[in-house]
Length: 138
Image (tube, rainbow, N blue to C red):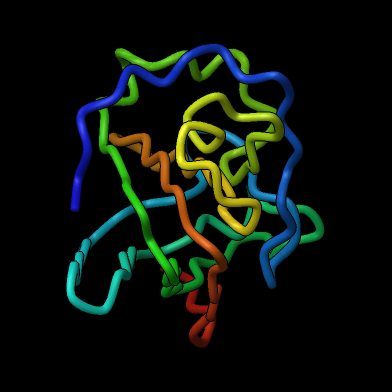
């Protein structure tokens, strides 16, 4: 379900709150697995969050996460070093007024951007679920 699309400069970005708080920085979200299911129109990211880089967070702890996007219309994965990461508000943003989302002509579509240590995901979806596991010290 990956789509070729050159994501343009967004109208604006807003940080989304995770169950751990606001996620900030390249070293905040680590990706271990990615599961795309075109039949279910979903994309799932799994890994660990550096609790020290979340606000309020869990200083000194690593927290497993599962981030599942629902009603996925399209998504892209790009190398973080090739992205416009300096325009980001946090590591987990919503792009408001996204020209990419507007091309679909569907009001319920949201453009969510996730910056992991190595990758940037831009996802057009209707919603998401963000679940955390038990924190551990490393």
